[in-house]
Length: 296
Image (cartoon, rainbow, N blue to C red; front, side):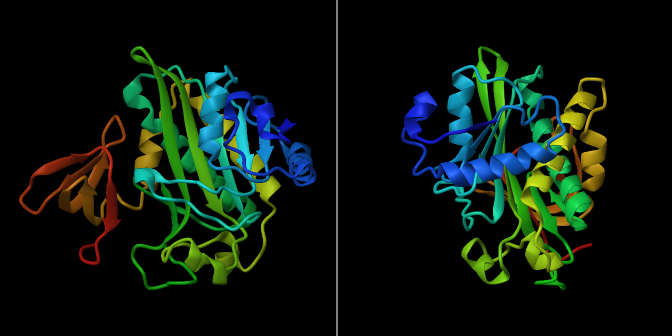
């Protein structure tokens, strides 16, 4: 586990790191180290008090040959992003902001399943450590359906997001980076600065959560699920079962195309299948699918 003090120590990552407090990073790294029980994931960890984007740092490290299981963790991101280039902003020291480096032996069209795997690992970790049940919303959000902040909303409020970026060599995956952002101890009065739909573990439970324990549990879940993937346990059935999107009336967008219908299933690549009122089935590979105010 490593702590980076100056951007020049990152080699090609120079310029991505804004300012570094060695003492803060050492304290966080030490707390994580004391509760981490993995053999691969997190054994090589870069802890940054502040950076632009952990995915950017992880991508540079991947290009330098960093091994699978390397983690980049930041206390603050100044250029964090979600899907579709949306910004992901969070108050310093209140969230888990990390990127996980995989070097998977998977076909390109199966990369989505590592997003699903990490989303389920994060949801399970939140429930284990904080006692908060979390739903999964296609394709990459963790939500609280019965939010304490908005109990009558069908859509729920967003607690966490997952963003996957790939590196391709020829026709195969060279590496895959899964970025995860979880609102852990964000106070209720600070949530509006993130998003009108945002929530946090603190806001939902009224209790602070130890972020080191939450991260260690998440990484152990990822490691166990990743191992099971290579022994033949595919995540599709479980992911489909846990998606709050499936079986619901949704309004979906993909580029400039709008689709309304029932989300029936996900296919073998993770695409969402939506049946319209006319009986036509649309295959949504990327985009948004929000729960409609009408329907089931």
